[in-house]
Amino acid sequence: MANDSKPDGISRRDFLRGGAAVGALGSAGLLVGEMAEGKPGPRMEAGVQVFGPGPVPVRLRINGKSYDLELEPRTTLLDALRDKLELTGAKRVCDRGTCGACTVILDGKPVYACSLLAIDVQRQPIETVEGLGRPEKLHPLQAAFVENDSQQCGFCTPGFVMAAKALLDHNPNPNLADVHHGLSGNFCRCGTYAGMRRAVLAAAPLMAGLAEEEPEREDGGEMKDPEAAGSSPPAKAHRQNKKKKKKGRGRRHG
Ligand code: FES
Ligand code: FES
Image (cartoon, rainbow, N blue to C red; front, side, top):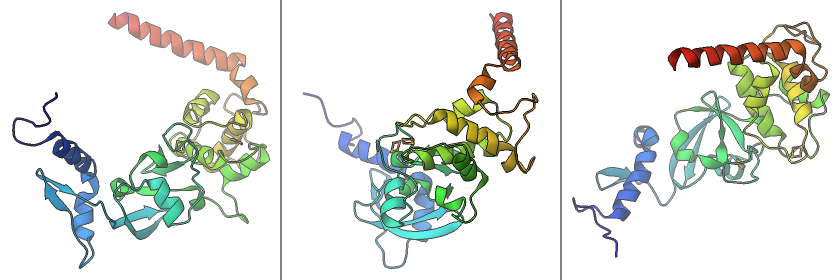
């Protein structure tokens, strides 16, 4: 039978609990500092602060606004958004970090909201699709998705839009390969990938403030069909040159 105790007297259960609490420590300072008067604070177990299991105060910064909530520490960011704040743009599909339907931007990076605890992301700014445009004034990415017929059922769309925004925030002039990579964490069961990639390429110069309408690409080609453009001779040559350079570097170090 396995020994459940560690040599220093801490049981495996305590050890695992402690590990979970350490995971939340990124936000612990803020939580303790912001614990409302009269609310129970964290308790110490095995030398670490432990929150819950009941609701604790959690402050989230979403689309530039602060929200004070009472959440069980086990509440995911997706549950907090959808069930507590009625921000239902991020969708729950797989609920296990696979499909990307719940994608939001956390501190500039696209993340799966279903796979993060709300209590762990208190310090970081969160962007959701609700923070982009309004029906009467769409964000350029949203408008490009509409113009490029980039959705069928639309269930995956908000996640793709947020993944695309994170990509364009970091890389204002992506090529098709960059777009493939930027959207690779998101699935679309309806298979509207081609339209979505076209939309991202079309929105890029608008977001960068480089053009008002039909964007011109660096290679002078129109991006009517990004799949074809990605296979165009200049694009191919560029990829081959990149590969050669990589190979060369590998040989020098090999
Ligand atoms: S619902 Fe979060 S990745 Fe699928
Ligand atoms: S448009 Fe239906 S899942 Fe993507």
